[in-house]
Image: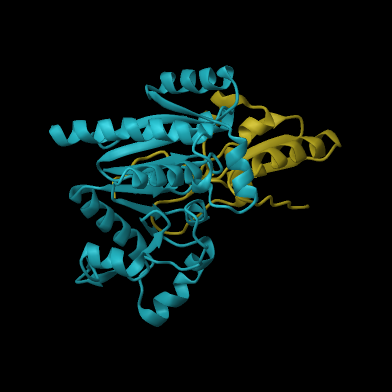
Length: 262
Length: 104
């Protein structure tokens, strides 16, 4: 099952994606995490050192005007991924700096600038079919979603903060037109610090026809971990954000079971 | 003419800072043109246009041809055509927004 995190920049996509990866891996599930953001941060949330590597660069190569993967999807994941604490496989599409270097690479190594995106789409599609979880942290905003990176099945988790700008962003996602019919769009409220906050997000989502699955409280434990550069996944099990993520994992698991039965 | 660019991580407050700055400069008596170059443009909200009007803003990207030269009209014309009033001496131009879902 592919789970794609969408939302405004800074809404907490990486934090929630990382917590979800850890939660699912802790339940013994096979989890592959892909950071597709040009301002990557999922590695730190998962307790890894950040690198500027563009891990999926060159994983897809030009072939007679089309594309082919340079290896099987499993080989590519083996070659291009790192293992995060807790057993999560981690890949990244590369930061803004490494993407600027693409142009140079393209000339020297004949790496096409779309290689990473094509590899991402192919690898994640194969994983969608193979079982296990592929958790994708997208770039803030609507660009990658408009570009089709949300995929053609799975669940899109729309992260919404209790702010007007975040709600407007949510509205753009939903208003973008026809979503693939087998992508399920669900809402998660983040940085919620009062019942009013939750009600605000819930009402905004209801207007868009998107169900609010979980409200994640603004959690001082998560804030402190981030500031102290400790992996956010290491935060205490009783923390409010973690409990909310456990609930999200339950709902996703139910949805995945329902899908596999159909 | 002075150009001010505001940059930073997503959610760090670029739009809020830009919006407040633009309003203060306009209140001081200068003409201000604000440019929202974010593909997820929210500056209208910080300028006080509200969610509805911000959502309805037309983006200047529509002045670009799908093929051929990117921009054929003079920049002043594009600004005049696409700028919306956001207050006294204050205008906003939205550069682009992605509205279409294109499964890849």
